[in-house]
Image 1 (spheres, rainbow, N blue to C red):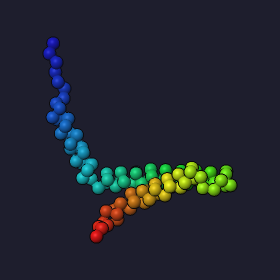
Image 2: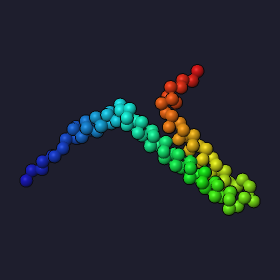
Image 3: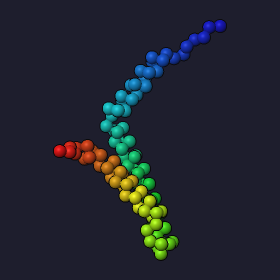
Image 4: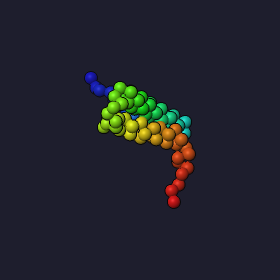
Length: 97
């Protein structure tokens, strides 16, 4: 019995390349990806802020501990990332001197 090849590697590579080009050139896909990442970073930022508030309410007498600084920095960094991704069209218009 002879083996029959069901798919050609050339066709598979071409379909993959077309799929990537379609997504890469689509403004709708790019906006969706940017806004999904914006939401994910905003969620992480909100969780970090909630954790920071919870820690401060439980043990306010310790001051700024390493854990509090960690959550504060996570809140700031992920919040900035969410804002940049949310306003990506305006950010792409910026041109440094």
